[in-house]
Amino acid sequence: MDAPRMSLSGIVLDSPDARELAAFYQRLLGWPVQQDEPGWVKLASPEGGPGLSFQTEPGYRRPHWPVKENTPPDQQQMMIHLDIRVDDLEAAGRHALAAGAVLADYQPQSDVRVYLDPAGHPFCLFLH
Image 1 (tube, rainbow, N blue to C red):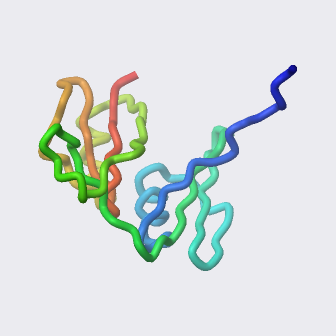
Image 2 (cartoon, rainbow, N blue to C red):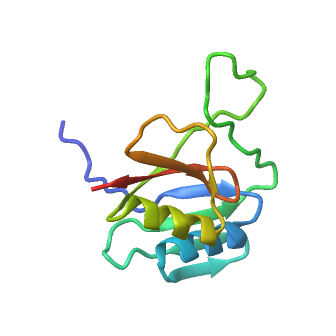
């Protein structure tokens, strides 16, 4: 049996405030708003592709980063992170901080920088 045709149409990040988190990623990535509804915002990638959406989730809990063996099981575990390719790691890091990101305390690799967005989702900047 042939598999049905499928394509990834979006990546959705939950947050306590979809508009607030979308505004952060708009500052970070420079992507335009494609859709803005109560509790839902979608940014469109100018290069095509799935874009990035944000959904308000009233019960949202910040993920714990990094997840270690001794992380309490009642803490929200990180379930997704974004990898963002950059030309200049230091300049991109300054830009991320100016946009509202926080540099994570734990940095697992010397050629990657892990930041947290305002809702606590980790994202990685790396050189391409």
